[in-house]
Image (cartoon, rainbow, N blue to C red; front, side):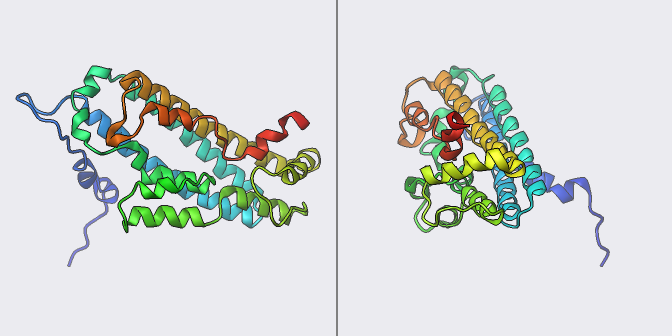
Length: 258
């Protein structure tokens, strides 16, 4: 049997990929024009969330093995991806409120709160809301995956392990935030330039996630105002409550002490 050559389309599964955008709106003139944009943007978000998680897992491995250069390289890649996520909001904001309303009822109970991909990213960052897993169907693979990530070590845990390898004495019962950990980090900034650089990239990561959250909130606000979100969520009010919650509070607390 002759083996078929790998092509661009077969390697990337292009036919299968392009068949995944199925609009639910219908009318005499076909689906609502802007529903395809809405689907594409959110499917791309899910792909980027998958990639961010892939990179963060590699960041953890690099930190735990003491590989500063690789950790910095991969964190820089994640930061570039976050900038891309923010830029996608600009595209989504070309859709007016009325254009969104033309197909919004087709979403039924679907809500961004149910994004397992983003919830798994949050779990790796140490932001572990039990409600994130409960938003998935009981016994589903998505719920199990989120729960597994929430039970595993976070990027912060890996960073503390990295510092310990470099001779920085950390309390075994460290929490977050933790004044004792902050004292160690201040010493890191003053005497361990490589570790301090990793800490600064983690601050960039934290800030990048917060920037995306902010742009997402403002996009939702300009699209639906203060209406309830799909799936019965509180919409923009819930999203606002997630703003300015750092993943790595200790790195922010030390700013006034440097």
